[in-house]
Image 1 (cartoon, rainbow, N blue to C red):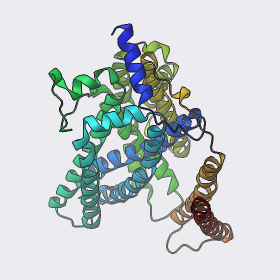
Image 2: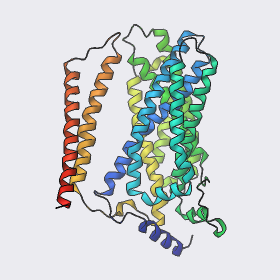
Image 3: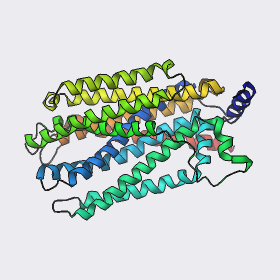
Image 4: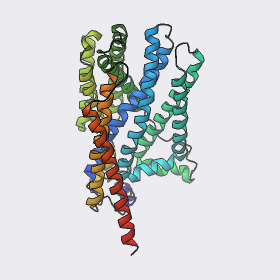
Length: 410
């Protein structure tokens, strides 16, 4: 592309920014985007991998242990799906704040797929709920229709998000895609960009992530008599195998994916991802599944850190594609709004942190108790505090809104 074309493209991208600017320094939104994306993708991994394992275990349900694993992973997938949807809102919003020209242009180019996304998600969610209701002892093989349909719909949604992400970092091709041979195409039906190694990398991450989850799952229930050693050893063995093959798949696809990126060697976190994967493979292949006993939480924690590294590497790739074209998110116009920024962080850390802390504490204790669970004093206090802060936040939210409304109509 000629220098003049670069300049025209840079002007276009920067003109498409929101003229009102953003309420805080762009670096804040960039890091929040990476952090919340990592949280979101952890549960996406568990949805894709957990659903696949639930189906695979269902085929072997004649063995009571495999049948139990299928039912357990069915419920895990259902919960992970809800969390993936909720946590997926934040990174999407932060992307729209500092990368709005790219994200909206990509959405318009494939608008039909974007609109179909929510319908596919709702239908997939419904199918999985039906399967979770029917996946009981003595269930017929016909129930798998619901599960397979759900997984295919989840994979379709992953495909749509992948396409939108790749299209968004190729602005030099937007005009060609929108008006091939000078004729505008406003159908929104076409998929304009697809990277198989990148797409496959995240599916391999689902395999690895589910494997790591099973290692922690086996350790979590080791104190309960209704989770016999034979069942936990099955979970640990499958988790070890899935982690091995998942990391191997990620390593292969990462190398192919990164090799196709211009000046990939200049992105340090791409190297960190590859080194982490190779180190994980060396560790997993030198040891056997029993070595994971008692270390499930450690592996889960390390996988969370690794996922955050992947999120940073993903942002590096985006910046590597856009900075040479003249678009720098750090130069976004800032109209500092301390009130809204303070309200956001108070909500994020105060309301969300306390409510999440209560839920995690309650779930941690309840899951380790056989039979009925009675909350202790600490959890009960957390419950009261979480409820109180939510009510206070709602009051402040409406008080601020009403005061602004009254002031503007004086």
